Image 1 (cartoon, rainbow, N blue to C red):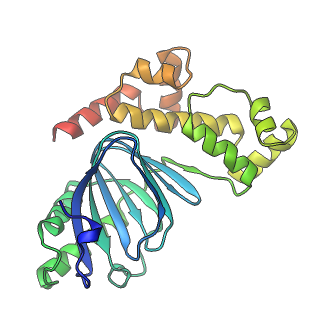
Image 2: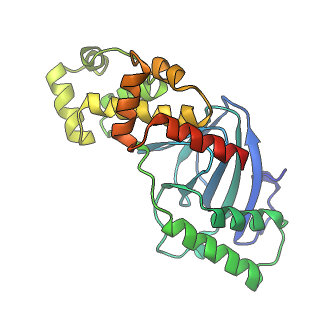
Length: 260
């Protein structure tokens, strides 16, 4: 198994390895001198930056530019691949933090990079593979399954608590008190900072959480009740409004990914 600590003193511009973490592991906030591409093969993970939170499952990837402060929390046992890219190699047109579905071409390119030892020569072939990988990252459609954090520290504390326990059913008056605000002030400031009402944002937290749980194989009924829905039908309706697909479609897609 290759790890960052195994890197030589002067690695080539693009290097990668495969790894796995156990469920519950938290990789605390840190940065890398290189940009990082992570491809998740099995399991589910939450990746937080200072401004956003992403929930990823099998078949999805995450691009993090160099020097971006981030944290990863393994929601289940996690199998993944990582490619580190020197900023001088990436060019200026690659996106900021980005979550996307991984194409078969991208998987193949990453496999080629990981198959090389850390001290390989960056010859014409490897340079072409790495540049094509960068193009694939750039063109991959961004998935909108991210949750923004407010800048107000009182609201952020509330949002972090809800993300940690998305099935919590406390009402808005409770959370306003937790933030030390009157209800009216809380709702006005939340709308101003997040561009949506508190109830709408919390529903989005729940469906994003649901997507991650369904991707790990949990049943629709189990996910619905865990996230505070009275029945699977109301959960399915809300899921469809958000993602444009019913939960069973996601479970089928996740099963196919795990078999491939």
